[in-house]
Amino acid sequence: MALFAARVLGATFVVLGASLLVMTWGSYRRDMGILAEGLHAEGTVVKKEFLAASDDSDYILAYAFTPQGGERQEHRRHVSSELWKRLRPGDRIQVQYSQGDPRRSFPEGHGVMSLGLALFLSFVEVCLFLMGLVALLGRAVPESPQVASASPTPSS
View 1: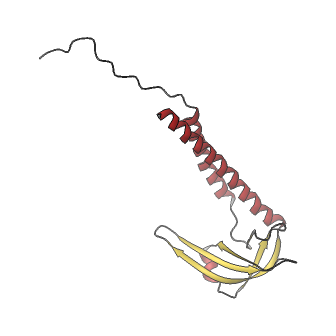
View 2 (view 1 turned 120 degrees about the vertical axis):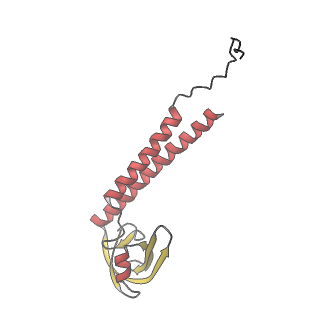
View 3 (view 1 turned 90 degrees about the horizontal axis):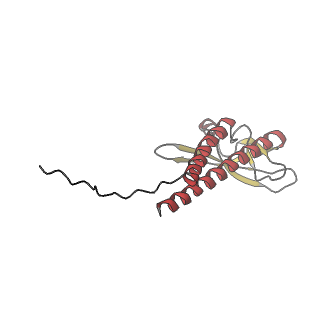
């Protein structure tokens, strides 16, 4: 039973690690594609949100823009504390968005996954994958039952 549980856990880690790795690099490539070939539009800050937690805080910017020949889009994006503090609702910002999918957008210069973050996440995900692989393919040695000693125990 323990061997089966180890195999299931190993397979879960392998699938999870591989899936997260593909998602990380897909997100990085999408962001780099928007930077290289994306379109620009003028947007407006709609709302600012601050989510405080004991270990970290999130600065969220809600903004709206109208892509070329399209309908008004409204999005929320995590931004740096500096940008969040600098902007007010109603302020104009430059938005960069994907040609093929205007739902993929971010304030120009903010909200892009960096190469450093992609590499760090990849390291963690590869470790997760390898741990799963070891659990999945590792040889399990069954526990040997304790054998009673054939020699008599010395009496005191």
